[in-house]
Image 1: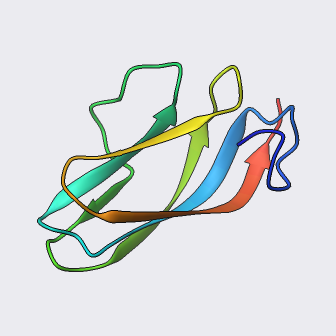
Image 2: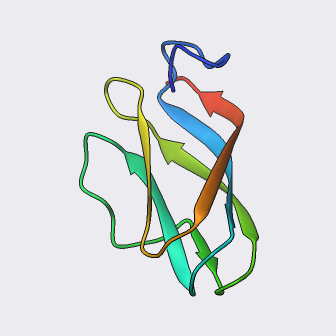
Length: 86
């Protein structure tokens, strides 16, 4: 993510609007730096057969990547709303 799509190479965190749609069951999405283990907390929770969105500020990995993980089948959309450089 860092260094592409208008996000500067030195970005350390990103602000993303996460949307889950066409969900197969109730579930959650976790957003986290790709160089770390998936956390046990969620950034977005949703009911089955619905769409849901949430704004999240997430730290990027050392190489500027962001991973998304859902526990059930869903379509995910991540819109970049901003970034931070520290």
